[in-house]
Image (cartoon, rainbow, N blue to C red):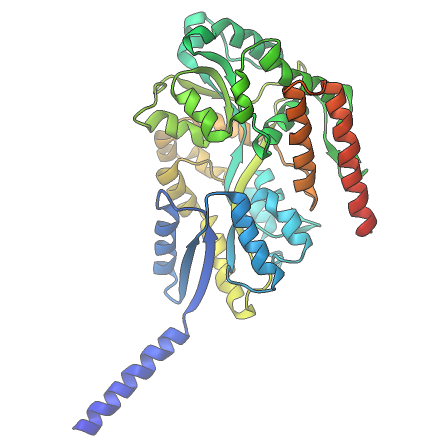
Length: 424
């Protein structure tokens, strides 16, 4: 009797041990899961894949800090983070160092392009290989006060001059209402905004085919002048914008103190749901403004799943399955429902239920089909830093736009030349 009981316990132990051994554990590095989306998505994934366990690692809110966490681990050729929720701008630098797993042999790239906005897929490519599967898109756009424009009988602006004119007409700084607010601090957000105006004005920063910086063109200098003029000529933007990042700009717009706002799609949901928002039911969205005869551009942002190059080979199939799960219709729709963010799949933007939750998605389609991504080069962080530095010097009137762009041209070209001299 006791012997039989003993062997029963042994059998149970062996079965449990075998079950544990058969389970693949993945680590997924994300930002703070403030709305519980990732937790819910992982629960659903594990229910559908009981042989895979996903451990969520919530890093700091700073994207730079999370990228550094992954880079530090990769320098040691270790894989504490098997899968990472990767910003689109991380891919060139991480892939060039050999720290990300190429996904071409595991994923149908043509299908990804067919189902997702083009730029969200292309942003995960480096040297002809795929390193990231998208699940969230992002693109700069302009928010405007529908009630104020309607009252004045104005249509939303399409060109730079129309924006400047409308903002001047509708603002009243004496009552705390400014014409145009944007991310003006010296960081990546300013660069994203400036690039939209630069492309929409017929200019360009870097040409990867010729390996030449092109920021000293008349179109580029004029774009820098436009930025300066929002503060000092047209006076539609307060000088305090030089300290504004996304949340600062959003807060000012939600408080009812701005007519126009440049920001990212996440703002719409918050502006309509925050208890303190004074613009509920008063907000519209449009693509960025541009020069007459040209088209609008939006800087492509967004997130997707990348896999560490140092992941154990036997875990790769599970990691790929997890990455594709986040790109599925089911999960992207859940993401919209729970967070309101703009996702990567085109079909989500035609879902009747989604359009009930997020009616602005019908306008967002046009924005996301007209995006452009920042140069996909490993030295982009240096180019971005140079641009934000000299734009700030122009906006604070330390340099004229022509001087700022000339300095930007010289310093950025040195970065490009040095890179290719050391990496022929």
